[in-house]
Length: 173
Image 1 (tube, one colour):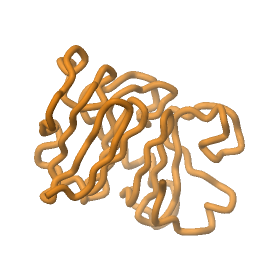
Image 2 (image 1 turned 45 degrees about the vertical axis):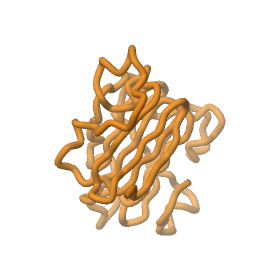
Image 3 (image 1 turned 180 degrees about the vertical axis):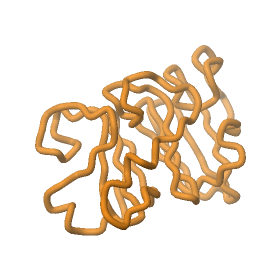
Image 4 (image 1 turned 30 degrees about the horizontal axis):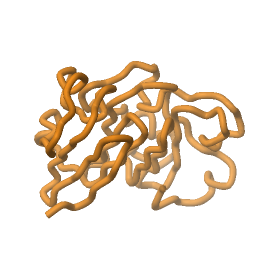
């Protein structure tokens, strides 16, 4: 049976009980994680995301044209549209295969090893909380949706300060 499932714009993703990831639907920006061949033909049935073979996924989240996958070891993978930096790799390039986001991006507080605990993908931005409870956001920030008090995009994960800096966040949505 499926452990969790999520829906994105014209596509879907699922994590099976054993941690394997599947995707289906339209992948014109690489959000299915199957490589460049997905850009031309829709995936009409669930297909294993081969690039994640050997990783045990525990959560998956879909944005408008991007995906986030969290592994049991606390690693974060992103793929799909890189618009506004929502993949967290420091640029705006699309990624057609799952690509690990550097754990160094999330290890900026004392005692935090950078392992991710929970994820959420918005339409054009992403949210991550480490296992220590620190919240990071990246992507489009033109409507203040990143929580940094600025109306600007962030291409790399940036820690949310203010009231969230003093609490341990355990779930994002």
